[in-house]
Amino acid sequence: MKLAVPTDFEILEALSDRKRNTAVNLSYILDKNRSYINTRLPILADYGLLERVGPAPKSGLYEITEKGIVVADNREKYRTNGVDFDGLVESELRARTPADEDE
Image (cartoon, rainbow, N blue to C red; front, side, top):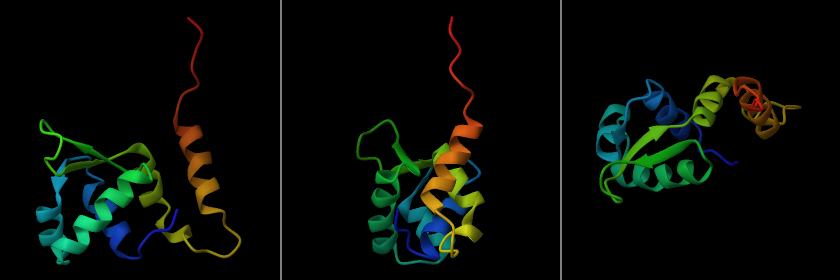
């Protein structure tokens, strides 16, 4: 995954309280251009870091996913030499997800 630093991490951090929010609100909170935030949110959703939610399909309401939390928690390791960031994220996700039990 290719993230825009620092904006994508700021978006994830702003949503890490697990509350839903819109591009308009996030652009205000982060003091960033609304149209730029509008371009980043679908990209983060494509990476599985955010999920578009809401009663209407085009509501523009997003919330962070578990993968997004893992990425935000490991911000300092992004672009670190010798670190496979995508592998790290997948490994942490597997560790956080309980194994399926046979019923």
